[in-house]
Image (tube, rainbow, N blue to C red; front, side, top):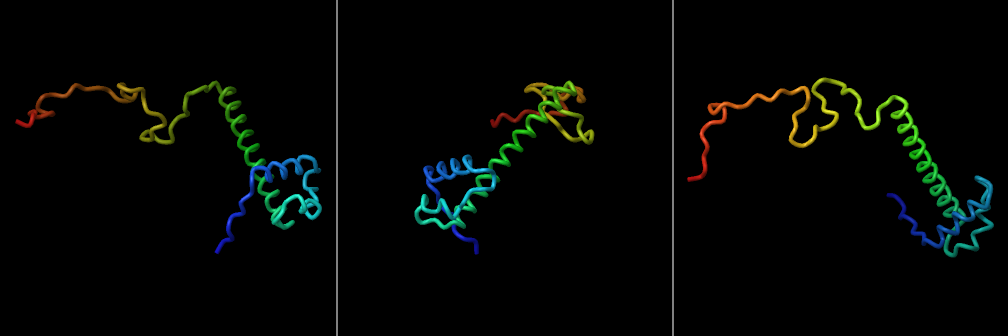
Length: 121
């Protein structure tokens, strides 16, 4: 069974982020700052610092990937156009409302294909 999730107040998180910003990366003295956080151990402070650091890394990586994707689309001349589908039957994007896909041709139906209309009377 997993341990219960530790609940940190916004003030505690702000103080911890400030301490991480002041210290060199990976050089926070967890045993030295334990007096700032009542009812916390140095191990829980260390774990929360690792969580904050990992979240910041994930956000930065996600932002870098979005910038790279946007730069790749601009370089290749694609602004909002999707690429070619993997197979002829896969749909990349739906056509605008009321229009058929360019590969389809509209053939008007005949009355025998539709059948008689039943109006419920």
